Image (cartoon, rainbow over all chains, first blue to last red):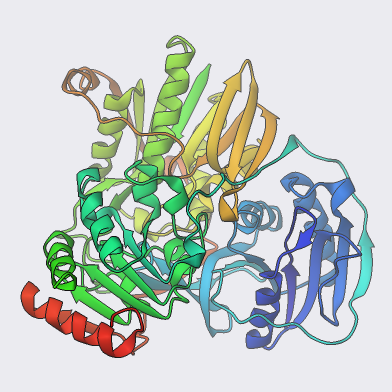
Length: 304
Length: 258
């Protein structure tokens, strides 16, 4: 069995998540080749063929061009699986490649079940599906963090890939993330508010618990999008990634993007009225209760 | 100018999901359905563009599914879309993303849409494939994960959300398809007068069999809850007891309470 792994490179750096692709190939027991739009000065630690296109001439984001280059490499390597990270780069590019190859795509894989069958998340992370490919080649995207990072000794065998037509889009550049007024990564305790708090007026209830525990206020994405809490308090993939001694999740269901940002906390306390909420998968303690009843009572008890 | 917005109806994610008899999807009875949240941002962005352009573009909302999808279509009309297309399909849950994209592309191919808006993914399947597949089938450029959008005379400046909160800025020409991320805008609530006005708007019904020619490329073989990872404790009961239990656990197992 053979995999073509699609590495990731951004703002001049090879992303570590590239090594999760090797972790997946390992678990599958498959041979790997890597495709990367990157730089020969930032090659991954691996001992397999690396099809390398230059990020300066190909642009880090040029999906039409990257698709065409991958399709070329697929014709040479004839892989059974073409594997991406389920990331802003991978979920954008994977369907284009799958459509070009008339191949099945299976998105956000969390586990390998058997040859050609993979487990994926659904219903906002609450449930799982097993999905079977019915085509000879299959495009796969991997949930970030679902497979172990694997680097290996030896030298990559670099095969240069030359840029073709740039396609229909012009990549203008990057805009940096907003300045963070609050550095949540330094806090020992973070108490985060989720959509389950109901409305903006209830944010002070959560902030009061954060204060009573000597911690900072955090928030999930929907709360930030609704402008209940400022963006620099956001925990998750597009906010801050934290690992405090204590993380308290108040009314947070636990979308994967949130879990990825806090699951390494030493101790996780979750309060949620839904016993099946995915936050329960990472919580050390899940209190099944109404946040607006439990949190004020808990804050009051801490003051005694 | 013509704009298409593709929307999906999904169950409320707070629901309890039970596998159906075939064990490949959920039982629909007792579930409350609503417009896929990502698609609400797509509708809002399309309506804002129409308003900015003085109401000139014709805005069509499309959804595939049984009669219950008339609800999100009516909501889209009340938010400001001009007309709706209901592709009637009682078996929509058995279609894979490739087939869904094929249906949309078959409908859109001769309609001359300048822009197609949709959500970056659905809340129930979360595959993030339909937008990309549809644009490939139509041979138009596609920008995914939109958190910023500007249109001027055929030129689009799109901002894509990247990990860590950075953005990638892309420039392209219409016709194009864009997939919307949460937070792109603030979707409006339909007002009562607009809900009344929407009742007079056209809803076209099409049979899925007239549009679907593609075979599926994937098959769902099982729908199930995640394996319990263990270790975690679930506490239920009265709030005062819960507070005491949690205080005890935190004192014992963390260094933050003394």
